[in-house]
Length: 255
Image 1 (cartoon, rainbow, N blue to C red):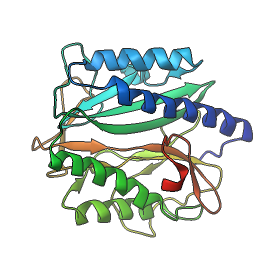
Image 2: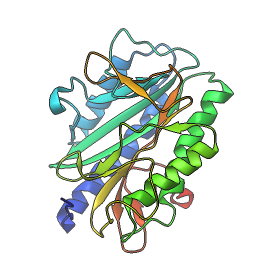
Image 3: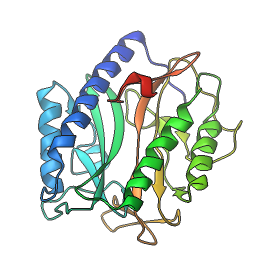
């Protein structure tokens, strides 16, 4: 069921989004070779709590941390650990959900650690750009299939593949709401976007094949062929003539 946000809920979500933006800006200085993914989780937790918010991921369906830290071939939901130390040349996707007074935002960035190979850097850039291709001209009345088609077309044109087993989603008073938003599909199909709803579009892109496997912990999702993966996500509001990014920390002119 599609849920339309009230004006008050929209204001809460915008505040949550601003906190998320500041987290991503701060992580640029925090992430470096030698830091553990557990330390990343602790830093984000403290930041969220110190800004009068709550980490939505913590204990969500039993998830044991405040963020997901997915390194190299981990697509999503990597569990932070003091034993997982970032090394020069790694890429890491940091997926975060922020709860402000019962309304959530969800976003992810894939960061380059130290001296990253040109191939890995290109994967991260294409993944991010596929997101902006998907939201170009997006507005109420368009369909979820339009989003998936744009992501898939751009990604595959660049020689990569989109994960099929995971997708974007609606968001609001819970992290995951209808509709599901796949990163592949046929234009003109799927659920119609409505003004006043909030959605998360999140391309998950593999350097190799799109197939993934899940580890025994029930969370960690890796590429089946061991290839690198990247992830990029934002929360946005749907308007009659556009979408409004709430978690994007860049210059609005880039949108």
